[in-house]
Image (cartoon, rainbow, N blue to C red; front, side, top):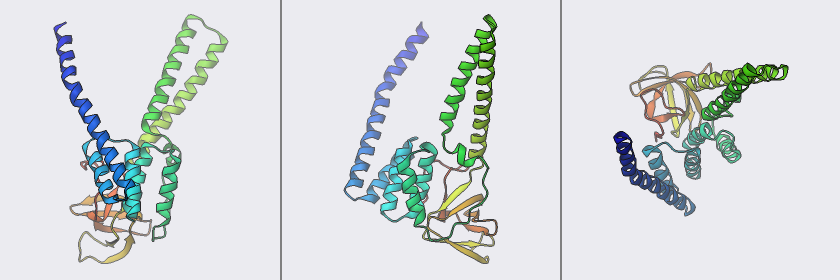
Length: 260
């Protein structure tokens, strides 16, 4: 009983702090939206980024941040944040329209690579959505299995088999989602122009150049340099400051934009 009272007292003390944090985030979000409406896009972007740095946010914040950067003609940063928003809200039609509009403004011709064959499908759902689908199917499967144990019948045999097959499909879909996320090393050029060289140094041979908004695959980092791949034929080293990963790499802070 004493332990329950201690826990209750702790929660009571924490409640005002949690409420204050929620109100502070709401006020910051409102002020960012107001700055955007007034045409102060840099100010709005700074406030959205402040929210992202403080705590996890929903796709709407990344979407608004992308809009602010698009208004400033920062194509790379706009695409970066639209892609981050798409991870959290993958089926938002406004997001897809704005992302496509920003991608059309890129200068470099995009050379598509063959991605994981299920990437397009699994990216239509969030990981949490797939988790809840599997969880609900698991409950249905357990329920009908228990019903069959106590009241065997032909109809519940087929129900158990059908739900079981759907459950297995959902589990496979969840594994595919996890694999796709773990192999997602996409990045975006966020500088006006970057030099891609044969090695991680300014004196190495210049291979080619990429412009703001171009998509690359980030293979690895070495100090201040990143090994990137634009296509199977175009691969090389570029300074870290000119690109930003859509998903943070290991030991790299999440939710931050690297501005060139």
